[in-house]
Image: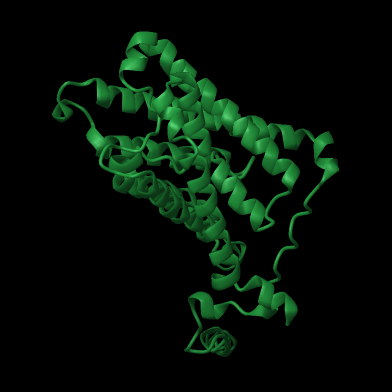
Length: 287
């Protein structure tokens, strides 16, 4: 009995009463920053995992465009919005698909499904330029195919009449308004991606990698609620390109540059903010 009492006392006093929690529990001594990805990595081109990741990005973006654009078509087609899922339903379709697809592909490709996300992670040196370019090409091809399947279901005439899910700046807003909306919206998304996939947080809290798709999908949902009335919400150049190519009308192409420039600026700002301000990685490497 005396031995057992000693064990109980030892267990009770093994940790101090004031345990640091959260960020304060993590010190520089028990965490090492992973090295930046090389800019060019020729060895990737001979690896099956490299091509498997690209295929995963293609399929994920294909499914994303198929579900999201088809939802948009259903809302636009209805004579009364009360009989459809409305803007909230469109936002849920985009956010819900991102949640599901990131969960499915995160362990294979990282679950980018968006050239802006890939661009932001490239700037943060989370992946090589070789992989980033490959991902962007596969994402764009997947988006084109996804929108093409929707057009096949709707028929050429109806698809064109309903706008093809293409992103354009709405009447009453300037191109500057649209550009600003895309920059801020993409910043929200990419900043959420950085925070949800932060390696330091993952090392400290084991539940973070499992929950990562949830805040990312929710960020997409919220941004769509805010910016659908302005631009239809791009924040994903592949999504905008796929719909524009299949729709192929001049007014969609007139505004198309906004849906590349805006998301790439927003992604760059998010990468800089997370790496320089939140994590202060460049300053740590100098000390």
